[in-house]
Length: 246
Image (tube, rainbow, N blue to C red; front, side, top):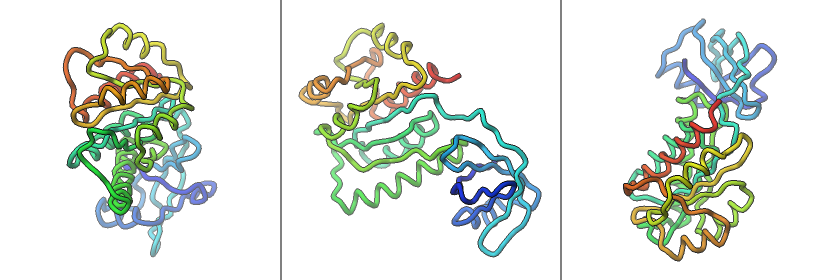
């Protein structure tokens, strides 16, 4: 079933109005017909509204509500991914898969070994693109919210932003003790906010690890093998999803 996002004001009792770019997509790309069912979320209340297409309008689609699914698909904790800027299009892959795994926010991180350097103009364009990737992934995985891709931060800014979060982890190739990692993951409780810091290609420098450690972020190992930057975050997010999923 296809899933879309609407503003809360577009849900009016048993009527749901779809507007914007989704109208063209539903009509011309998906070629849906009157009577076909789809689902929408308003990004606010965690509910999924199942409805059927009732009427085509010039610039909108009128749908009729069938029922509301209230059990929700969101993780019971907010997970924040601080992703060191990777090369090429890897950031898009990371955002897409992280959204599918339940991440709440993605924060691009400018680490010392990040090859990619973005000026203000390039960052603005990238953020528009990345937020579009997050929205598409949220639709595909039928999330009830669209995770936000925040503006780029350096490590100092990221550590300060993460200070409000209860669990803060930074996978590091020189960290030891898989038992410690397992214990930390298994101790996660619903409602706890979680920050995950992932380095770029080449990982974090030792000084960055120490800066993170001083800010209360715990270095952990993800195993004996060295994982690529686009793999490391998705690995630990999968573990967190497994632990928290009802």
